[in-house]
Length: 216
Image 1 (spheres, rainbow, N blue to C red):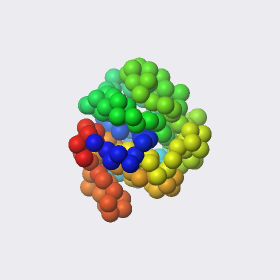
Image 2 (cartoon, rainbow, N blue to C red):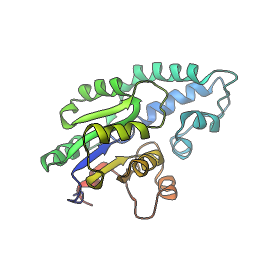
Image 3 (cartoon, rainbow, N blue to C red):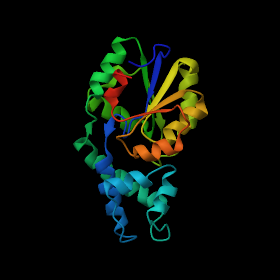
């Protein structure tokens, strides 16, 4: 079980709780048809995906002279919203959320996705009651969530010393560091384990699956 010094868990959503990797790859590959001959596999996607999204698009061959970032964002979100209900939560998510709740942890979500969209999904998957709050963006540009993390801590009077952020990307590690909390990363989301380990500080725990949280 997670160290008893922690009282609060801040969860990332996409890739950490929601298993939407294959949906994102499929939509991105459709976007790429107008820009390059490149198509992403799961492996190549996890080796290149990252934030900010505009830089990630540039790495995979998106030409903003052909389509603007806003146009691409609208296309991506339109297709994502059509397909996201076909996604599932990662295996063991509800077991872990329930166990943490029963052991007295407060749980929040900090997401780079649109807050209202995530709220709708939490209700769809029937896991909204596990969370004491959610902080996200009011747009679909998937920008940095550091500012929203600061707001989350302040508005909920969260003690940094007893808080753990759990995510699946290097950006989650960067957010945790910026807002002053510790971090655990799960390597079955949007970035590979090797990539995560190469970018985080020594001592930052990178686990394979969410249920490992119950045995560490």
